[in-house]
Image 1 (cartoon, rainbow, N blue to C red):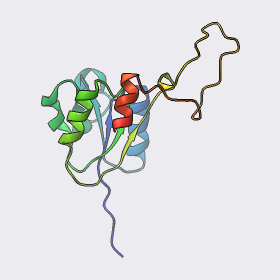
Image 2 (tube, rainbow, N blue to C red):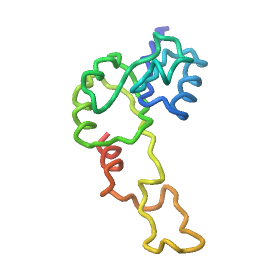
Image 3 (cartoon, rainbow, N blue to C red):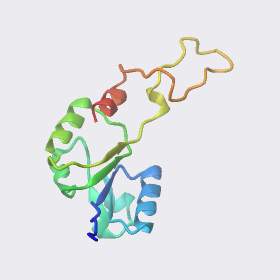
Amino acid sequence: MTRQTTSPLVVLGSGYTGLVLHRMGTSQGRTVHATSRSPLDNLAGIPSKQRRQFNLEQPSTWMNIPAGADFIWCFPATPLEQVQAFAHTLDATPRRMVVLGSTSGYEVSDQPDEYPPPWTDESAPIDITKPRVQGEEYL
């Protein structure tokens, strides 16, 4: 029997959701790296080997991402040009990427005073004019 090796997991954007995902991954024995624009300030509770500085708008931080990693993207994928540039720097090895979106990507009613407000779920139309939606769709 061959043993399958697990790629490291990188949580891009370690706010509330990202930190929960980091804890879940490490509790399952995975190597999980948490990213922040200011890891010394925002990720003090995470071992230093697992902290990475990453800022989509600062390409010099992109090299801090381990090669061959899987990703969970936890912040708005904007601006589109930076999302595209970052995606092109990733190595060609097949990887898994999960992009967490937001209900803010869905179209909203033209009637702001409508009550009850219309239900928003996965069947609602997406507003492709929104920058974050464009970035998420690109990824």
